[in-house]
Amino acid sequence: MNAKKMALAGALAAGLAFSAGSASAEIDTKEFRVVGTWGFLNQWKDHEKRFWDEVLPAASGGKLTANAKPYTELGLSGFEIMRQLKLGVFDAAHALTGYTSSDSPAIEGADLAGVVQNIDTYRKVMDIYRPIIEKELQQKYNATVLMLYAFPSQQLWCNLGDKSNTSVSLKDLAGKKIRTYSTTLGDFIEGLGASAVTIAFAEVVPALQRGVADCGTTGTMPAYSAKWGQVVTHNIRVRLGYAATFMAMNEKSWAGLNADTQALIAAKAKAVEYDLWDATKAEDQAGMDCNASGPCAAGEPAGMVPIEPSAADDAQLKGIVENFVLKRWAERCGAECAGTWNTLLSDITGVQIPN
Picture 1 (cartoon, helix red, strand yellow):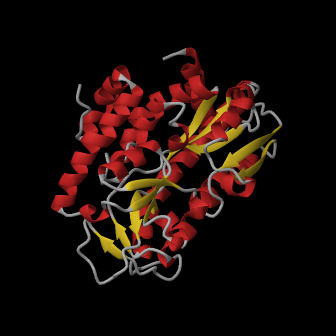
Picture 2: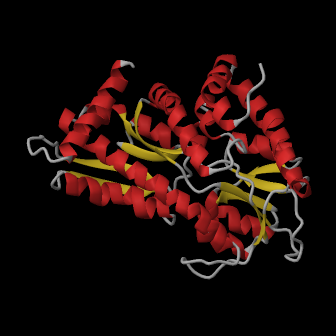
Picture 3: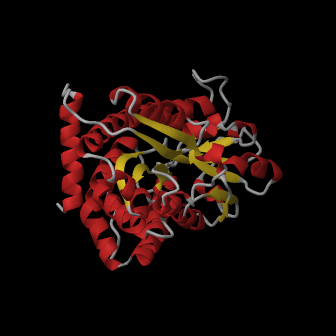
């Protein structure tokens, strides 16, 4: 374990002790500049915002506060966030690993399209791959990782016209235009024989209305919250990833805090990370229910046709993962990177990158 990781582990251990009731800790007074994810989604509303606006102020006796706003309120796309964090525009940022893949192919290995088909396995994958994510963000962006979590499973949402058609398969998507937001999703879509179209999340509904895209990829509850049900007919329930997300702090901002303050932040961040995983698992199923015929506590069911993958779909999925997703990612990342992925994740995922 290097010195930086030892310091962070020590901060977390000390923070747990502080949380248990130490009254002697000396906490800095600091207002953080923070950017979060999408302001209309539950990850921001229920967890990211709560961490900065409620958890830290309460735990620090009001000494730690934040000016925290989501991407959507700041008019940002997400792709620029980590470069701005490195420059010190923000003290802390919540961002997707997919938004950093052009600078760091290795970090993309946490969430390769189609590789993991259930969230419990995915949580284990993220735990195992965490040291790679921490190393990449530190080296590429001078950032210290304090949370690692996910969004509901990324699935396919398509406007296929006839809702009476319940026998849709992955083969039916050949030739379609499918919205994407990351390189690995683009690889998967090309493996389908479809065309990848990069469209910002806020622009997907009008793009689907105008026929700029036939399908989109996003999480289950995000699709419902953004009212994709108004413009798509079918939900093809192949998991294309879980939008791996982290909260990281600018290294200079982090180093400027004393040990007690670092300890408190690390401990509280870990607690919110646990909350996020539990909430995301529940939200994943709730999103599928809400987009179909219910039940839906969030509002009226969207009435999409749910399509569970068939044995033929599973076979096609495996071929796309091996021949497009993994192969192309290995080419981007290099032999050493691919070897590390195999060592860490091949057993738990059941797939391996060929030498």
